[in-house]
Length: 270
Picture 1 (cartoon, rainbow, N blue to C red):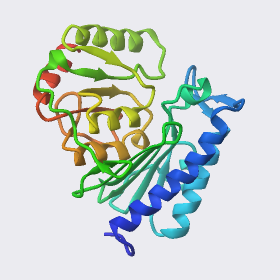
Picture 2 (cartoon, one colour):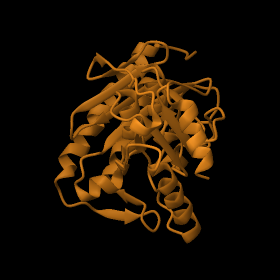
Picture 3 (cartoon, rainbow, N blue to C red):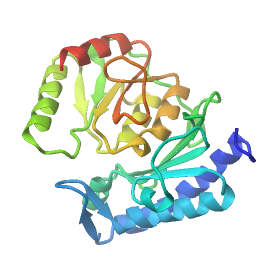
Picture 4 (tube, one colour):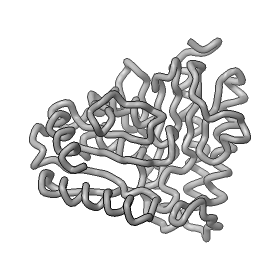
């Protein structure tokens, strides 16, 4: 494990960092944003960059031997390759488009992998003041209270979440909408929050029953949410049904009761 500190220490530091970044997000949420384009529809703001710098500076001070992977400034800290070393994987503002539009599904996502396994997860939505936390093997919590996944066992009664993603080429959009079209005949309804991390937390606390996303930004979108879902009794897996790979940009999650039916529906939607 890490050279110093316990997993509880790591969680406490991540919560502190998330709340500090959350203050920056909250104060900027109602102000005019300075927006840059990373792609056709993929946005980045000064707040994204400021929050990542704040989080990394704070955690690096406490854990100088740890590795860091972040959405906005990874290049400044070296490689994005995930190793067995304790590695903080950070999305300083998941839901940037929501942030720009004043849609309140925005969050800070801070995950820690040890031996490449998601071990600590913190997702904080400062607009709704919801703090999701988990340590591997020790349960998942929302604002300090234990959470668990839904007990829904029928696909047809399940609430599904997904995201279309940021690519707008015709083949990608067609594949995405065709998949959604197929799945809509098999579930109760569909939601898109605009934040992968918040969708995963929705699975963890039972608000959502099913979630998948293909082609999201990177491990920073899922590192924290994956451990939160697992600790809430949920399952995280590849949409094909294979084992989840944090570096693959593919994820699905559900409670254990609907997993097999969900995978079957996903396979038929291809």
